[in-house]
Length: 294
Ligand code: PAF
Image (cartoon, rainbow, N blue to C red):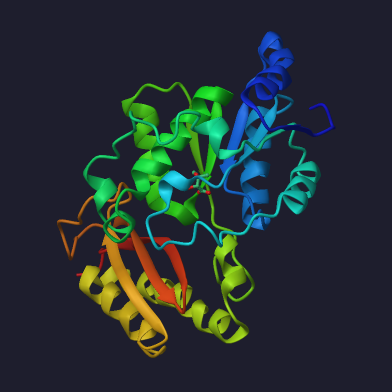
């Protein structure tokens, strides 16, 4: 660890910053972000640091236009480079790659992109067509530029984590993808760069998401319908005029459909929720164990 943060806005500066580390053969770790960093990102950086030890830790900060659809919040997405750099420095990041759009997409939108497969069109992908194509394309590019050994992604964006793992494996990218646990506020709300758009009242209402997921966890031993019903009951506490539910889904940990609703033996699963509060789209998820109670 060098102890002094290097800011690299261009590919050349990134390559120059990493060159000494590459010569030493040290493992390279990366955390890809869109900035507006918070303690959730700090956790990802901490996990990456543990994995690479003295090797270089790279944070990328890039609001990727390719993953935003028409009418989404690309323009208003928070850009807070100065405080992001302070957090990176505090977390012992060695290099911050913070490129401009033309640096990542020099010829405009790329012609060749990464197809996320069928899962890319489900859950988040159903509400945000093309979103995961944009995510996987930029992540593949960032992997190509940073050439990390280890990349840490948050479980909060669970579908993204599953798809990035899948891409790394299917395309033999030679990077180990690690998932890090979601960081929550004391009220259970998952930390997100978008939480800053919530009013105090909406922030209170937003805690219903986590409470619903926990209610489902508590009932999951009785099977999928019972878990789902428990979550829906909690979500119903907030009027539909305020909370616009997008999906509540219980899937396998790899996000396949669950085939056995009442498994005799306990099986691991994942519950995922997405909803809009005012103009802000929020997502959350938790692991649960289905079945085991006859
Ligand atoms: O999770 C995010 O912040 C983004 O989707 C990512 C992985 C940085 C790609 O732009």
